[in-house]
Image (cartoon, rainbow over all chains, first blue to last red; front, side, top):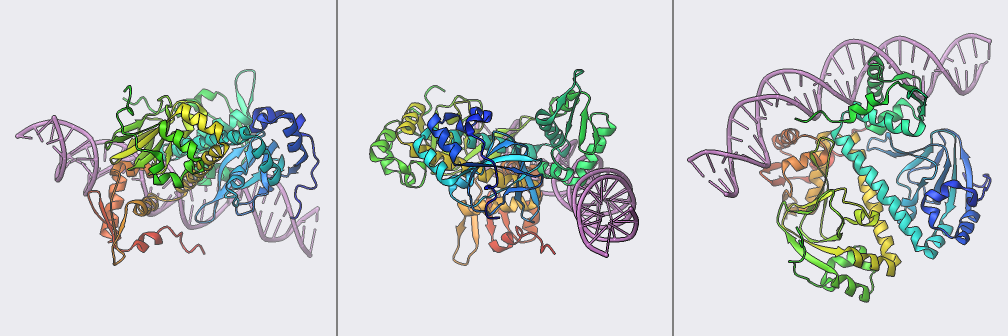
Length: 243
Length: 243
DNA sequence: CGCCAGGTTGATTTCGCTCAAGCAATGTGG
DNA sequence: CCACATTGCTTGAGCGAAATCAACCTGGCG
């Protein structure tokens, strides 16, 4: 519990391709050197926690590889999956900026590699490069936009539509496209987690899955999913003709 | 349509009490002078739009008085009320920072006064004072936190519980407390808007209201609400004993 | 005066939750 | 290596909450 991140190797940030495409892209060479020096990388096994709701904030986490689930607890104490995070994404910046405890938990869904950038280093970087703050600001507004879209979804769409929406998003990230246009993927989450991310019960997800199967729209076998024609899914997102 | 804000008076920002308590609190005297010079204030009648989804972003809006509703359109084209904003709140910073069209609409619910700070001035202010950017960052993370809590609510609580939650929030803002502890308020929104903010139909809100009335928990007469004991409402938020 | 948006109420149906049982895969200790 | 617990998933039955459809009311306003 003392030094989770001490055991990790320390690959350089210079080599990190993802850096070009996220908030760190505004750093100068000198600043990347500082970042690289103050960062530790660690690999997490599936199900392992990166941080827990209520933990003190040690810094921010930058995902190098894998899939991370961000969770919260509802009023009854059930774990609710809020969203998924992927390589290049930064986690825990909220607790860092507000200087408070984590309000969410983050957990590796598959085997994942995550870099921790410790508080003091990040504080220094933010002070030396104001553009970095604006990058985080951009990240926050993007996240806010995603959250608002999700609110819209959960308040206006049916469970079936939301599940289909989720499947499409997952296909985007995890799907393989075959030559004939058919798609397949291995789901990164359990049925229970799929239920919680769309705000329903796992039994309901099971039933919708069974119905999609019966309709030939998608084929499920454990966590394997096969989608013959993605248009069949997309069509369901379009609201009825609305006459 | 050309110069909505030109007609407004121009009270000075120096006199604005709210400034002490929001993002502008980090500005120097000199910077406040610039802010004051580049800002125009305008009063909106109930129902009047401040900006619409899809509009180009003219700058950010700072609420001086009144109650503002922030809306989005769902997939079927219905207006959904996302949240309410109050004096001291800043609107439209997202479109400004991302340099894109507004993704939400803002509309005065009651008669309201709102100040527009135009793009160029704000750009200059952000450049001269990095702390201002961090203030906006804080605002964004706060909004993000609120949005996540709302997702949690809508996915885990019943319509009744969500309506009660809404009533409590509104009481906080709009309620009067009498000497004997009883509370009352004039609702700032229609039943339809209450329905859309908690993600249900207006008929359902009507029915829940009728039930609360029958149970003696709250009394409704048009937009007037009277709550004999607020504890009766609060108790409903607590999840069952959970044995 | 009559129209209209907003609100209420009723009847009906649909959807999704709860409870419950059964099953497969995985893990654990003897 | 087997008995057994555990966890995740599926399926069924019944029920309850809320959506839908529809009629009607009300107050405000041209």
